[in-house]
Amino acid sequence: MQELFKAAVERGASDIHIKAGDFMRARIHGELQPLTQQKLTVDQVKGIAMQLIPHQEDRDNFDRLYDYDCSWGIPGVGRFRVNILKQRGSPMIVMRSIPIEIPSVEDLGLPPIINKIAGFERGMILVTGVTGSGKSSTMAAMINWMNRNKRFHIVTLENPIEFLHRDNQCSITQRDIGTDTDSFETGLRSVLRQDPDVILIGEMRDKTTIETALKAAETGHLVISTLHTKNAVQTISRIIAVFEPSEQEMIRVRLSESLQAVASQRLVQKREGGRVAAMEVMLMTSTIRDCLRDPDRMEEIPDLIEEGRSHYGSQTFDQHLMELVQSKQVEFAVAKAAANNPSDFDLKLNMFGAATGGSGAGAGPQGTQGLADEMTNIMGD
Image (cartoon, rainbow, N blue to C red; front, top):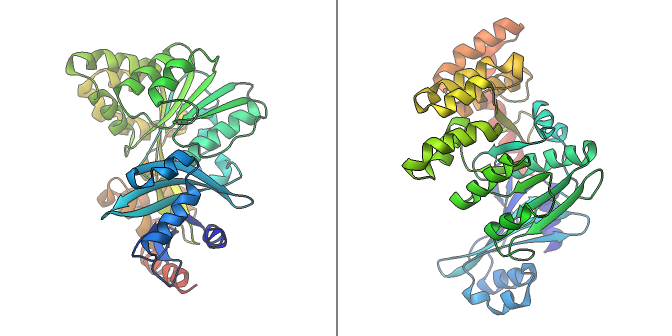
C-alpha cells in the first residue's frame, strides 16, 4: 500500500480516494484517475484506516467514527492530511498529499508580492479560496520566508498539522487540535500568553475564532488564517455577516484597522501539465479601508485592486490570468473559463496584448486542443 501511495505522489497526485466498493483513485492534475484494477472491500478500507489512525482509543471506537481527521507520513515520500468518513454506511478515506520539503513562493509560482506580505509584522492576513486551491501551501511558503528572514516566535493552530516546519531563524511551535490542545477556541485563548509574534490559524471557523483573531491582530501580533471564499470582497462580506446586525458597523471599523492583505487563489491547468495558482491580491490602502467601513462603497474595491497594481503590487484574478496567458503558462481558453468576467476577458486580454506586444487571445483555439491532448496523454500513462 505504501508503494502505491509513493507511486501516486511521484505522478503528482494531490489527493487519494479510498472507498469501499470502488477502485482506489488519485487526483492527478485536477482529474481523478484509478490506481487499482480491483475494487476495494469494506474490510480492506477498514484495515487501511486502522493503520492511519494514530490513537488506540480511536481505533477501538472505529465503528462510531463518522468524520475523523488526522495526519500520516511515509518516510522519504511525504505526509498526508487524512479524513476518514462514512458513506452509505461504509468507510471511506480521503488523503491530501503534503510534500516533505516546505515550498517557497518561487516554487509555487506565486506573485513576488506574497513575500512582501509575509514581511508584515502586525495585523491580519487572509489566504482564501475553495477547498483544494492550495491555501495551505501558500501559508507554508509565507512561514518558510519568515523562517529564513525573521527572528520570530510563530505559533500555529492546525487540525491536523500539515507541513512540518523546522526551526531556523524562527522558533516555530505547531499545535495539533485534539492532541496538543482541546479546540481552536481553547488554543486561541491561551496563545496570547505564549509570547507569539505570528499566529497561524488553520481556519477561521466561527464568530469566536474571528473575534479572537481580530483581538490578536489589534494587540500587535501578525495573524494569518484562511477562509473558504472566492475573492477579497466576498471575504470581507463573509466575516461581517458572521456578526449580529448591531455589531457589524464596529466590526467594519475593527477590520479596516487590522486587515493588511487578502490573497485569494484558484488553481488552473498549465500548458505543460500540472496546475498553477491564479491569485487576486488585495493590499489595504487608505481608500480601500474607507470602502470597507462604508457598505455602500464595497463595490468600488475590485476597481481599486486593479488600479493599484503598478503602485502597490495588488492584482485581480483577471490581471494575473492575462499575465499567465502572455507568459504562455496557461492556454487562453483555460484562463477565460477561470476569469471573473469571461465575457470581458477577450477585450481586456487584447488590450493587454497590444500594450505589451503580445498575441492577445490568438492562442485560444490551440489552447483548447492542447489541453485535450494533455489529458489524453495523462490518461494513457
